[in-house]
Amino acid sequence: MTTSPGLAVVDLTVRYGDVVALAGASLTVDGGRVCALIGVNGSGKSTLLKAALGLVRPDGGSVAVLGATPTAARRRGGGGIASVPQAELIDAAFPIDVRTVVEQGRYGRLGPTRRLRAVDHDAVARALERVGLTDLARRPIGALSGGQRKRALVARALAQEADLLLLDEPFAGVDLPSQATIGAVLREVADAGACVLLATHDLAGVPALADEAALVVRGRVVAHDVPDVVLRPETLARTFGLGAAS
Ligand SMILES: Nc1ncnc2c1ncn2[C@@H]1O[C@H](COP(=O)(O)OP(=O)(O)O)[C@@H](O)[C@H]1O
Ligand SMILES: [Mg+2]
Image (cartoon, rainbow, N blue to C red; front, side, top):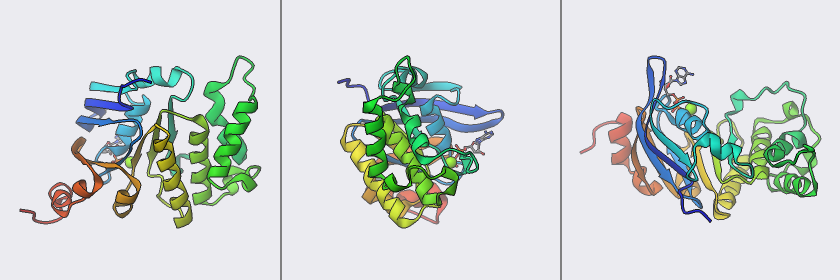
């Protein structure tokens, strides 16, 4: 086992043209932990997740996943980095069934034949079972409700058995039972040793869900601690600008 943190972001700056999305953000999350990224719209949460996936190029600072660059971590084979994108980014009309979506989680592990083996089919079946979609495995992804579709994407990430799991607003537009299922699955993934980082608007759910919370304000992580500390009214007031705090 490596002793490198699951994710180590150091003084990261990311720009989109003239827009500074991250301005020296630092965040370290260890394996076995669920960390909730919180912050207002536009604060840089999604950009931080994209940087951890290696999808945006840093203008300064560094990102390491298990001691490697995100791109190297993704290419290393095996679990690597799994991501659950925001629902809005999924093309619901794409004619693909639930099982095929979940099978995508195994693609990085396939041998030269590119065929799924028994171990892959087992992982897919287990992932479908854990999110309660076994009976809907042959349903087109576009025919699912928002909550079911999100659970399918979580199942794909589960099947990948990644070391780092990134989720962008996994509870947005998702029914309460699906939220509970997803939350329980994230806990299990972390308990199995992976590092889980999710961006969420649902502050009320954070203490039950996450081991730690990181508050992002204007492209920086300004507080990172156990949820009860980060969610203290005075911390939020200071950083969200929700009125006077002394
Ligand atoms: N593709 C993009 N092109 C230009 N600006 C972007 C792009 N994506 C995000 N931004 C800007 O970067 C900042 C951070 O955005 P984002 O990381 O999406 O924040 P959050 O997820 O917290 O809402 C915002 O000012 C946003 O408008
Ligand atoms: Mg976002």
